[in-house]
Length: 493
Image 1 (cartoon, helix red, strand yellow):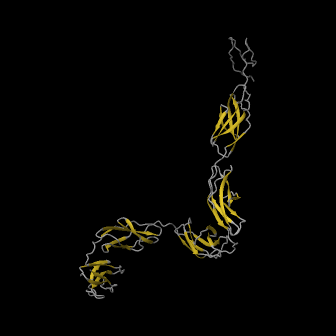
Image 2 (cartoon, rainbow, N blue to C red):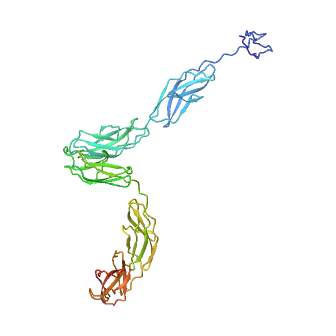
Image 3 (cartoon, helix red, strand yellow):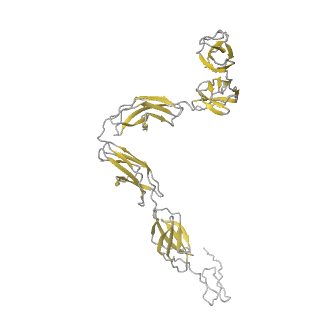
């Protein structure tokens, strides 16, 4: 096959041209300077960098430097590798690394390159580690409990460290006894009836050690206690809304002393309360759970489980408030009191009480539909509202407000009476009777002063220097009248 070549022009010191002909011989027509050969490619890599050193630059950096490489043409730059992976390039014989972690060992190497892309062998690796000099935080919350007559159970809250906590140093009476990796330790082989003092410190991989924790003391039991407490009795469980259950039981007894209880839900331990009650939360709505409880003592002896009880949580949280109370009435009770009453509210579960507000401020939370507000000022107008609430804490809107004005203080020749309301569907009102002798009244039965359906009344115009006796009756819409109330008396000065 005929091979074609392009025409090659080379500059010479004369006007002579050199041609590469079609026959591929490349012979020259004429030449007088020997010029025209193509320069050879540069395939020689630079020499390997030497003398690589790494020094710390602050707490997270490193400065690298090395001896310059040589090249037949010229070194154009260097390639820095960290742990075998290219980390950066530089045109000089130095390089600054940042963002390093204390306590981690890094391996660096450097290679040189020239303009032709030739790359030298990598230098020998230089190891580098930023020293970790920061100790962990001091452990907190150290507790120690007796484990029989020869042991102690210790636990504490975890320390933190800028790199990581690797272990803890446990000291008993100032002497190191263990280096656990977790936040608890059981010290065994102790002497009975002996007091021991414990502290704990944290350490990291660099050997930094925190200050010792606050010390705690514990006294081992006098002798080994192998007698478990009695079985708890009287376990009861009551649903607390749709996600909780309240448990209670009778206390167990022990030859030394009960230290706590173990509560199990569906056979799995969920709590270790020190008292005889526990509230289990985070449950599922409309779900049945089975509970049992056992007692334990300081020696770790555990009683048999109690009889189990089952309870079903409510179907869903109650978010429906009661209806708004209606029919609110207010009547002055003397010059310093007001009697309030209203119609009962309704609720999808049940109304548990009411909130009475005077002039917008809560003053009482009665469970019934009436309230007597006392300690008021005479001749003063007060405004009242009432709202209903249920066991879930839902509160109804306030009722329509009512206002009432307390009367001025009674004159000196008067007697102010007050009595408990009578509950009767046909109640019409009350009558007041008085006289100057016990059991003898100036009015015949049925002719007393009719005061209406109120529970307080002030009689005026009484004679000075006289002892008066008073009683009250109630009468209904059919005219039937009750017996006299208890009698009270007052001396009019």
